[in-house]
Figure 1 (cartoon, rainbow, N blue to C red):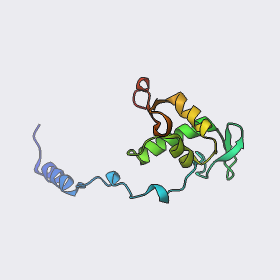
Figure 2: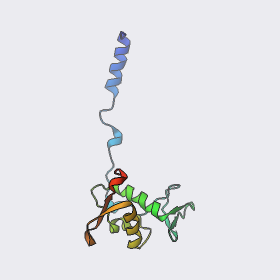
Figure 3: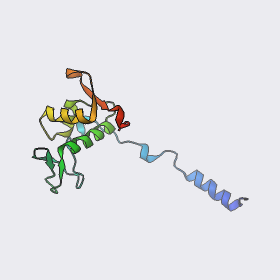
Figure 4: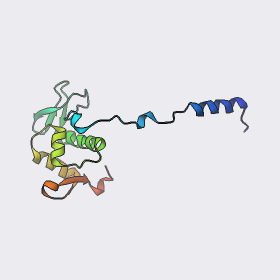
Length: 133
């Protein structure tokens, strides 16, 4: 197959017009303190609030979600936004802002993550059997 001069010129134009840097790799700068804490609603992006035991509700659209699934989603969000921070009971309690109970957060983390350390030094990592998720 032979290339035509027109095809070669078009290929050169396409190559020269390619972006040198992928704009999607640029992450906006943000800090932990400046972000609003809470669990966003999956339907309208309002923030969920406690409704009944183990259930959260969005005051904007009325959507309900189980506390455990909401917390686990927020842990993934936290890990993505702040990979250098450890997952601790206190950090997730503050990040989710949907309960005052450390024990509730501890139980959720304990079920899905592997506990490391003891006492005030306790943090959680992915369970080895979860394939890094």
